[in-house]
Length: 548
Image (tube, rainbow, N blue to C red; front, top):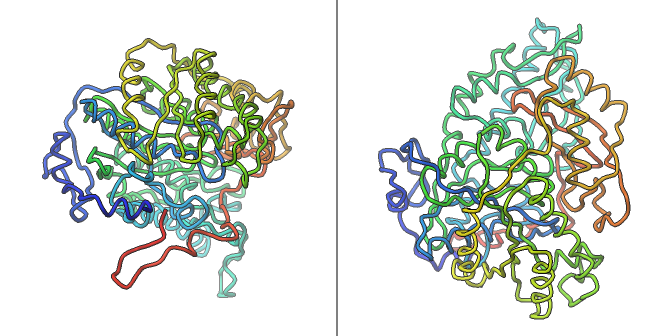
């Protein structure tokens, strides 16, 4: 059966019933049909334990972090623990692109999966609108005389689709009187600073302040111009007044799931909203949350950016590994990663070792490796991986999420109940007081394993400008490929010394971090030769088919 067929064979509970399980009354819900709701308010309970799910470096199809996260929450529930999920919202880009949906798979899914993967409650559309409203206000201001003397516009438009044609465009070509043509570009919505702001805001007031602090460009004197100079923050906040409220849904096993916000981890900070995570921690004894892509990206940003902003830390980290990813990062081509290849499997173990070492030794956290079992994995391969991890005193568990749901995660759930009680020595990779270059160097050398960092002239110039504006104490958000510790997507094994190449640095004053663009990373992805959009359809009964 396909994911969508499995999901449709499960009778969901009404969302009001799910809410009651975590002590939320109906009066504190805004219903979006029978199975979705926004949470308006919760009680200020004591925080439960926080479990972060991350992964080794992935293959192009991902390693099942969301599936593992869902099954762990279900597994905790099966052993009698009060658990909840706090996940990101799917972007339409991957849904119609190469990765497909982001609601888990098999018997470990959040539901209703079609709604969540498509328009859901409209949050990402609201972010798109708020982003593009600011663009319209900027160009309108220039059209009507440009009182602020804006000379260089940094703000980009966005759309929540993979459309490489929009990476660079010309706007204002109608030749109308006073229209000023200019070069523009689009980001995918999940890379928009508005998305980052929504996910890091702590209240509607904080959201408005952060939106006002967006740096939109520079005037003729070289001074910064902010969204608040254009009086744009109020109307932008109005568009986001509902989007800031977390969304409540459920797993196929009726475990509560809060799904809210969705920045990518290779081009943004890769975590769901601070509001959603902190809310979840008040509602259950165990919150399972996820950070995007490998631990070098999503987990590093979760720990160095989100944990600082939210004043939280995980009590345990789950690092997801798959046999196919181990072989892929050991030299097997993506066409042959499901074939038995012990040589590549052995070589690929260095990738998971490095991620675990970073989490345990560099961040000082307690870690368990979840081996996400696929039906193509052999007993020999699975036993080899567990034995090798055991030799390095790394706790592991084989998780059968897709086939068994929560039942397939009972072993790891029991291990996590023990692990979250163990003391840790959590620390950040860098101090905010350190210079920007020093922060970048510390992540590059300590987390990626690079031997050094090269900076383009443009990057150096922008670092100096950020320092001059007084923003040098912000955390950094490095945008690079998810497929390698390096900034080169083709260097999968990273078995030779490499350097990180910083081509540009951008200030995100509203979100409160500095984006460091490394390698050839794009903030507007493209579609593959055969996109998932070709298989998504609606049948004669009005049911959606083809989402996976």
